[in-house]
Length: 204
Image (cartoon, rainbow, N blue to C red; front, top):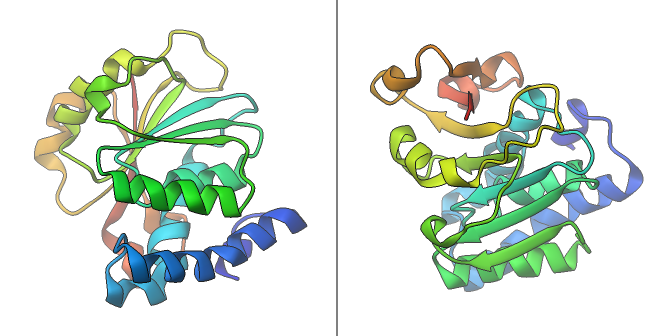
């Protein structure tokens, strides 16, 4: 499996990652959370893409992470498999998408995942990091989630926002040029699809 090319996995993690294919194909046939033509690229375009965050920021045990606009569970579920000692809260405003994330987490017996249907504005709790996959322009996201970032530090780098983004980001990054750290995913994983994809870490 492509995941084990880049990460050392336990037997349980191997099984959980392997199960994602059947689970997402099944759910996708009922509720479209991944485009039909993209489901064959699940591991590269969705699972491994999500795990680029782990290459940039290997979370310490007990880290608490909020996934905003998770859709069917990305990047939250792949990260929750990789970091079983961390806590993940996955939120999305669309109920049927959260249902998919909930059911996938349940099928994998992920006890470190909570899935909630809500808008980011409604979430008031504090987390070490907020993660997200291209849900909105960065300045808008920062305004929404700044309130959710805790002052209490558990990791080697300051708490903040970690987002997966593609394309031309110059305008989005302009307000954060001095603080944002941008990692080209093509330096982490092989494959043409990753050429225009990036991980942005922004301490908040």
